[in-house]
Image (cartoon, rainbow, N blue to C red; front, side, top):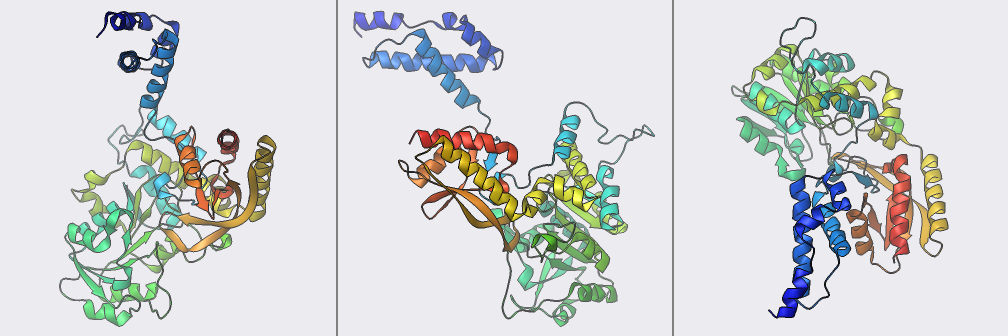
Length: 463
């Protein structure tokens, strides 16, 4: 290295000097010292490499700017809030159901200090954590008892592991869901012998009856929540299956998957069995998800006859699937809102999104389109009617009419524009359609309209 190059390198600011800078001291109020030092080292090393490769010696301000960019990129949380403009209400990739404000407040209160998770405040004795939601679930569904685990797959596994040595299921109900979850594999892992009956498209009550034998301990219905079999089909009425179980003294297990707590026909989303209907029909054990149609946190809810719930809670595996305080706090707050159906519809975000009238969505879309057109006069924005979906493995054959704002980028490809939207702050996830980008107003919260508009306008202006 030449003497002149050594002299140039000596002109680079020192770490000690940079740490004394007022700007850096402000960073240290926000970030751990080690993280700030690592960012400064990165910027100094980057500057040193540039000088060695004959770049000009950067000043301290340039080095600090490079360090700030590196600091912000490395400090950005991996999991962060996203604006969902896809129109998929229960988007599994985006965390499914957003929590209601009541649930958010409950989690905040619970997480900010201690709570009575397993402590009875009246007696001073140890409590049972599921009691925080068990009585409420019994009240809302009519079931005798309830418990909660961390997701519906865990609920299914625990039920099977506790109740059954062999179980009869219709071949057309042997579901596979996202993440390669297959019901036959789950049954095998739980130690249960699977007895498939019927064919893919047609199963009769006689098929169940023929399969009942010494090793059969339960009959099971699985709601095919993420697909439908149509055409030449036949399925056993659930009431008929329950009667068969009673005749042979076999418990009936009902895996509902999504878990609708009231009739969705009023939203044009019929075909989803309700939890209460299953209880009324006489199912012994019912399980469903907390973060799908229910609109709460990820959880697997098990309700049914007290003797079976007690046996499940005594299963040694129960501890491996139990939920924590924040899940219980959010679930309780969500369930409280179901004490009034209209209140639930208005205040639980996923229900509110599914039930928002089309004319309201059109009004919001026209307002957003007008603001964007005014902001970026030469960009191509328009409003079109489209289709939203429920998502999350729920109601696969039901679409919901919606209105979207479309944008046709001119100097980017659609894929490039979508990538830039995803990678910005806030991150925006939209969908492509016929050479345009669609922003579906059904899944865009009103508080996200302004930041959404700012991000779109910023990107459009930089075309």
